[in-house]
Length: 364
Image (cartoon, one colour):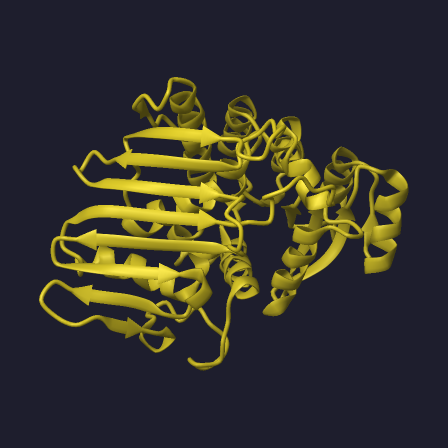
């Protein structure tokens, strides 16, 4: 199948999201991981590379130059570092003509986002952002239904992403960097809020024009937001809301999306990700499953569960198609514009909250 030669920045021993990306890239046999700068610690970077049996580098700049010069060098690189380290390696590989697959959010700061966007515009290589939930089959079906006009005019949009794992201070590796404004850039709104924002934008095809936000640090002593309540206004006249929290005790990974139109409504919840509830205005609710999904973004027959990992794998498979010249489904892969929209969401919520919830324009 001529697998795409893949590199990775970040994702060394003990890293969570790097392992997820490696599994997703392997799932359909579309990639071969051959090189990596897997840690900012040189010893750990080399040890992690040796464990995976790949070429190891201690510095991503060195890796970008060396791999671009090889006949068998990498064709794409996955960036799976904390947020503050997305921009620099992504720019280095784009400048080297190597495609970039980057974890979300785009960057830690608006300044980094602008620099990265300039690098994307100047490069012959492509940039992809791994909002994995948007690649789940029933989310793609929801998007198709709205595009087809099945809901009529979209009137109300409600997204939630609520967790409880940061309800107390934690010294775990995952919690430690997410609670650091320097490395994370934003708290819950960046970590999971950008997922809720992108999901609503992706499915409806609309970006809110303005928002009113209240960001809170519920846990005493925490210097970054862990709960956010956000009201949305769309240029079309639709209204919306997003609730994001990482201090909702008892909630594990409560991502949900509800969209209400003039003719029908849609409801989707991650815990039942293979079901989409479609309710026409004058009829009973219907549960749609993968058997009705026109995108056929799945590997097993309907009724054989797929989920989180497969969402990443769907994106990786679509990206491989694009790298190999098939751009049929390019429009369903999040890219630099989705990343800039997410950064505009973060900036607008922070600005609004700083002014006691004043309505603030969302400006990508």
